[in-house]
Image (cartoon, rainbow, N blue to C red; front, side):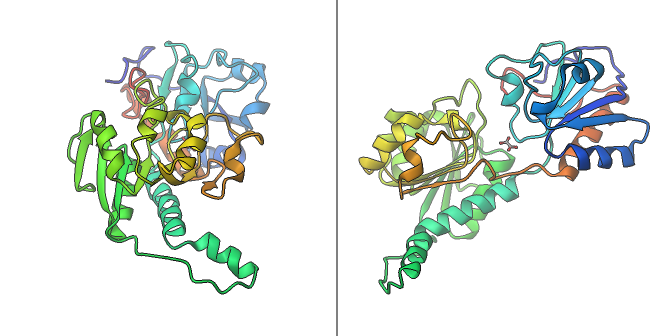
Length: 321
Ligand code: OXD
């Protein structure tokens, strides 16, 4: 359940601060639709403490280092798929309303996952490397259809990934907190069954946020139960025990990994993952925020607050999303 509104409703804030690389087009987009709003912005790490002291609302993905407590802001609207930037390591003050973006990241993350699955299965990268060396050397390729995928998380993102892999002919099983059935999955199991399920999957796709329940879920112990799967992580780095990945690859528990998120971002140059040819790294780009998605989500929440209601997209702080 979302927390109750931390202040009296209706709430009609007018001073809006955007902390994002998209601040200029997003501010223009919002001003065009709601000219009475006073909207300013900068990249999140360039926001000054006096701008936070001026703002009633902060829109962004991360808190500004100039004042991580967010000054006197009363409402934060997160623009990313996850809102851990405002909940971890310590949550923002409970007197601040936290809403999340209703933007649909699922379709783009599904393309990211399909791209990696095809690249591994069809050996696209080794074949391209052979091409550069003018080497004619047939590699073993086999269809994706009929392989088994395990998608951890059955929300908007997980179900879009499941539908896309299903369209390739994968047999897709889901794992969620409750194990409630979902039409995009052949079957869904509760998270307690992961130790059995990982041993049956060729693809394990993580789409879950960093919450008290998911942190460290893919531990060394769980990895040791995999039987040559490829691990894809588009959720959060801290869901995986990252230091156990080199061993998991060496032991053959994992055949490969496609990682978009890491415990520390950017991934430090000292990480052995960079040089491992079995690992495909991308810099947290599997699902990106758009101006329209961020703008529409913000205005939807604003309209609800102005009408005296707690927004549908209010974050349940206990669950972490
Ligand atoms: C995220 C994002 O939450 O990039 O990971 O939006």
